[in-house]
Amino acid sequence: MDFRLTEEQQMLKDMVRKISVSEFAPRAAEIDEKEEFPWENNKILEDNGLLGVQIPEEYGGAGAGMVSLAIVIEEVARVCASTSVILTTQALATDPVLIGGNHEQKLKWLKPMAEGASLGACAITEPGAGSDVTSILTTATAKDGGYVINGNKIFITNGGVSDIITVVTYTDKAKGHRGISMFVVTKDTPGFSVGKEEKKMGIRGSDTRELIFEDCYVPEENLLGGPGEGFKILMKTFNYTRPGVAAQALGIAQGALDAVVDYCKERVQFGRALSEFQGLQWMMAEMALKIELGRTMIYRVCSTIDSEPDSKDIPHLASMAKWFASDSAMAVTTDAVQMLGGYGYSREYPVERMMRDAKITQIYEGTNQVQRIIIANSLFR
Ligand SMILES: Cc1cc2nc3c(=O)[nH]c(=O)nc-3n(C[C@H](O)[C@H](O)[C@H](O)COP(=O)(O)OP(=O)(O)OC[C@H]3O[C@@H](n4cnc5c(N)ncnc54)[C@H](O)[C@@H]3O)c2cc1C
Image 1 (spheres, protein in one colour):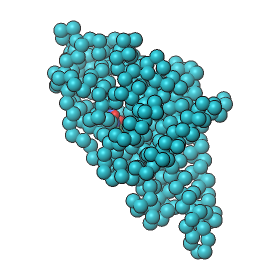
Image 2 (image 1 turned 90 degrees about the vertical axis):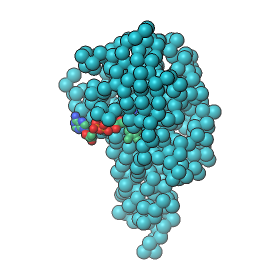
Image 3 (image 1 turned 60 degrees about the vertical axis):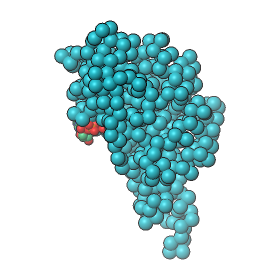
Image 4 (image 1 turned 45 degrees about the vertical axis):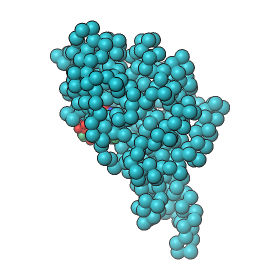
């Protein structure tokens, strides 16, 4: 397989790098410090058509595919992980509509999200249901030609800033995962409210919320796919979104390596630049290896999604990319702090933020333990 970028992809990469360096990098530390959602950066993503890169043009996107989305996420995460979360979350919210929605639903909800006019969130997790989605308690009960949703979701990214939320519920608990259904709920729906904001270790510019559904009535046209199709839609969504989280991890790692290389060229100890010490050169070589391997795995799974979207290889390739790239990001950023010494630990330099930002990529959209389960299952299918 040839992973060279096409001319269009290279142009996209150059364009996003330029925006990231000039607009996002200077604000990254302040966004982290103030723990504020980066509305200005969101507007820049919207104005440049970056919130629906992989969505077909018919539904308001660029129709540029998953490799392109991975390129965009990497470039943004390289300088500001919090801003890159807007991209990964928009994909997590739009993909259930793209996968499970009919034409009318796509025009109504996918299009405004892909165009960037509406922000999206995807609500799966609950206090008692994280890795095991089937233990959710949220229910959707059929009533008057629609459904009444009741339940509490936690840790929902963009929960407090989104217009459109895709929600995972049970329509028939007795059927287990075959009784799970996904709905679209808009923020103005009576019975829907936003709860407390989570205070976090990293990606502190992203909005992480509790969402409450209390006798929240939605018409039948808000059901994605049929009743009981929610689990299938969700699993397919993850197959397409985990490579995005992997790209986010990759960007964070690349940003840390860039900072290390710059620092080691300048910093002098024992009369020599740090970059001349072989002990540190070998650490940098190892960082570069992890980053390049991760990038290769991400392009491999993304190009498979683009060329063969129903390939049976996608679930385990997506899990491998997410697991490897996120573990690499954690290792690379931790080493980056070490290599900058005391300055690495200081908030004057970006690597401590990158180390805190990297951690979440090992946890959300399936922890790396869950990715191991998926990969192991693929060996026996
Ligand atoms: C910042 C942030 C943003 C998030 N955004 C969203 C969002 O937008 N939407 C959403 O729905 N959720 C979101 N989440 C939730 C996230 O996806 C879950 O936290 C994650 O899936 C893990 O679930 P849990 O926290 O309940 O951990 P648990 O499932 O309780 O896991 C605890 C530990 O046990 C391990 N474990 C669990 N089961 C097994 C097993 N079978 N074998 C081995 N080990 C196992 C896990 O790997 C983990 O280490 C977010 C979380 C955070 C922190």
